[in-house]
Amino acid sequence: MLRLFNTLTRKIEEFKPLKPPIVGFYSCGPTVYDYAHIGHARTYIFSDTLQRILEFNGYQVKRVMNITDVGHLTSDADSGEDKMEWGAKREKKSVWEIADYYTEDFLLMLNDLNIKKPKIITRATDYIPQMIELVRILEEKGFTYKVADGIYFDTSKLKDYGKLSGKTLDELQSSLKAGARIEMVKDKKNVTDFALWKLTPVGVKRQMEWDSPWGKGYPGWHLECSAMGIAQLGKSFDIHTGGVDHIQIHHTNEIAQSEAATGKPFVKYWLHAGHLTVEGEKMSKSLGNYFRVSDLIIKGFEPLALRYLFLTASYRKEMNFTWESMKAAQSAFVELKDKISEIKNSVELAERTSLSEEKLVTIDELRNKFTSSINNDLNTAEGIALLWQVVKSNVPPADKLDLIYLFDEVLGLKLNQIRTKEDLTIPDHIAKLAEDREKARKQKNFKEADQLRKMIEKAGYILEDLPSGPRIKLQ
Ligand code: AMP
Ligand code: ZN
Image (cartoon, rainbow, N blue to C red; front, side, top):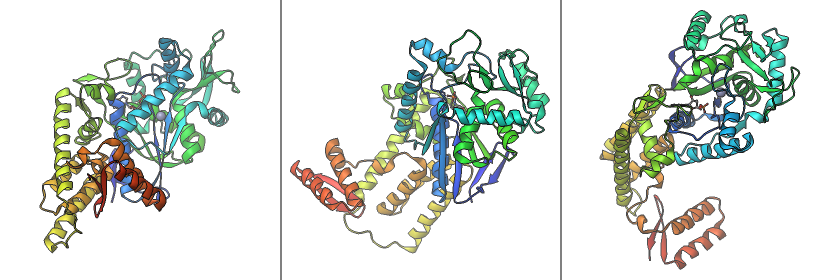
């Protein structure tokens, strides 16, 4: 049984999707006006782990992630400058160029961290008609009002506004007022009201603006995720993720406008990752105190050691990144890989022998413990501890490898790509030929597989097909 902490109910609940075995899953994506940092990495490793756990449990995950390329202002409460236009000005490029450049950077970070790219990636600027339609419905139902700055959602009209944060409307309003950073948009009725459609001010020419029934302008940031989520996953879907900073404003407003428009519950399970601080300081793009994965690489760390570090802590708690903790994670990860490499080396060439009753029980126990840990609200810290238990256990090497690879489907540390000491002498281009041959063989493309084998042999290597998979050796 999979159990998840649901921010909406503030409880750990049994996960029951609306239409099993399909799971509709939406992750708020990045605002692509600057480089992705390791704080983002934490949130996306968390949502990737959640997807892997759902798949481990046999669900078919339909996962959508957006790319915010318009409408996210420097203050989450509709004031300040559009982050994208700000980034473009800073770099003297067009907003579209900025969006492409930083989207690419973000996707590269996902790749470095072995984060599965969500099947559907939606760019906000591709969904403007759906956003306009949503505002139109809200207007028809009487939830909107117009001020000089744009079309606003009247939060006082929705009975359960703010339910995600567990705060009343009054409490939310005082907390927003207390965060004095927020300058109130002129004529806004309630401090919690938010922009659905921002109008381009008279005399201003924005790089990104669209015609609408209310005039030229651009969508509000919250509206974007509602429109894309509904377009791809329907009016109600299972899971929505993001960082904790999104609970009080962004996700609260997504719920408000979606439920006001459709009359249906928007999302069943809301999950949020705790923030990453750096050496005790809040980290954000706007403060400029952030590290990228490439900064870790320059300092000699492996990106997957960062993944390892994040997996050793609870995703819900705030985490403080220090170079000390990064070093410790890197050495633990290297040691783990060395041990697995030794296990691979000791796997006999012969078929595996049958297991004693006692060993079978141990294997079952380890597998079951792992499953219940990860199914207990993503307890990956316990999962990593169990991985070490497997490595150190008296289970025969071939069965150890089976368990390690199984656990790694969830942990995503690429443990099945660890080379043995013998493999290490194999140059990359030969390893790649062997990989391609294996792919060809799996696709029953035997002619190509045979040609690739011949190329490997011509280069002076032997390819052996062992029970544990192919192995290359020098001739
Ligand atoms: P943004 O590009 O700022 O919209 O952020 C994209 C996602 O990364 C959101 O879900 C944020 O909550 C998350 N995020 C941003 N900064 C951090 C951080 N320091 N730690 C963890 N998650 C973060
Ligand atoms: Zn969002």
